Image (cartoon, rainbow, N blue to C red):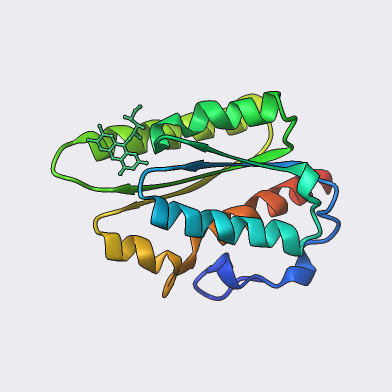
Amino acid sequence: MATALKNLSEYEAFELKNAAKYRIGIVTAEWNEHITSALEQGALEVLRQQGIEAKNVKAVSVPGSYELPLAAQWLHKEFKADAVIAIGCLIKGETPHFEYISDSVAHGLMELNLKHNIPFAFGVITVLTEQQALDRAGGIHGNKGTEAAVTVLRMLQLKEGL
Ligand code: RBF
């Protein structure tokens, strides 16, 4: 499956079987939109390759990463998503805001995983520079949106196999 470096961006499609039946939500933050749209495209591409029909995928956007957990919960409750991919890009600035938002989103999404017993992927990149973000949005470190989509499908299959 993954390389020695656990880069799921180059996953082998055949290892994800019978994914077509799932309903998947994607919520993408608009801050650093040039990065988050590339991550979203990476996630959508995985779902398409896995044969998930467009009617079973709901992609919505929110203003910023801080809004991701609530909208992710709505995708589960209103759209009946079996799993949700939350996508955002936090670039560290000069104030502690970055830490507050990163912590809140990470904890908020983890809480949703355990509260609803389904995968809510942390497709949020938290970086120091824009270049680090570009490197992870289809650059030298792969596409973390692709990896988040592979992750939720793998988690759904893991649960099904238990
Ligand atoms: N949202 C992001 O998704 N990425 C950021 O890098 C980001 N930086 C922010 C920096 C400051 C100083 C503020 C006030 C907000 C920032 N936000 C960012 C927006 C945040 O996630 C949220 O949308 C707003 O705080 C409104 O709840």
